[in-house]
Length: 225
Image (cartoon, rainbow, N blue to C red; front, side, top):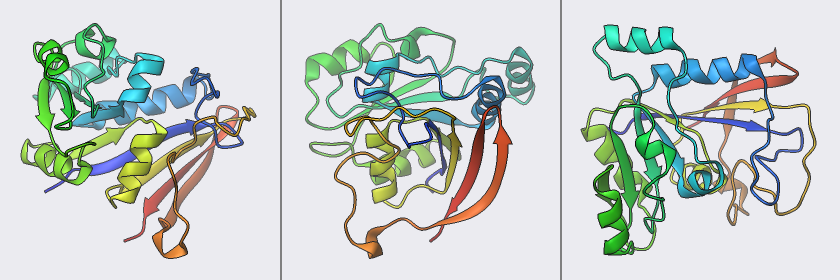
């Protein structure tokens, strides 16, 4: 019942999502931005972690007016449902994702989230509580599937992506590799957190396609089961 999960990221040539200060960096160009908008317009929902909200304050809206019109013509809302995984309900109530453009928002929290923060977010989003200290991603995906979400795009960051891989929930990885070196041992990567030490725990990928895009390379992988 869970959605098909596509993780989409842009990383530097040395595998970094941003600088060590978590400052957003332009890694790709116009062609990749358009590719990402196509993926957004075809998704039922878009998900990010709280780190991405605090660092970048994205809106996660579909940009192309033509794609918005196409969504509306098929009975879908103007923008996909926007979802924040935020165990402690730290999302600022004035975050762009909660206010820019029409459409449903969901904030997924754990039972450790303070009630006053949940109350501040409730006027702007549906609150789903799952897990004790951190959001139970598998349970969350089941809930989203029961709400009719069939295709979910994940836009980061590294902690959320690592959690999804760890739970065996990712179906596809689309990775744009840009032509810059960011560096920094503490700069965020595609899959942050403690990582894995045993080869039996590594996620195995199957190559789908490689293509040159902008001044970089786009690689699409399918996750092996």
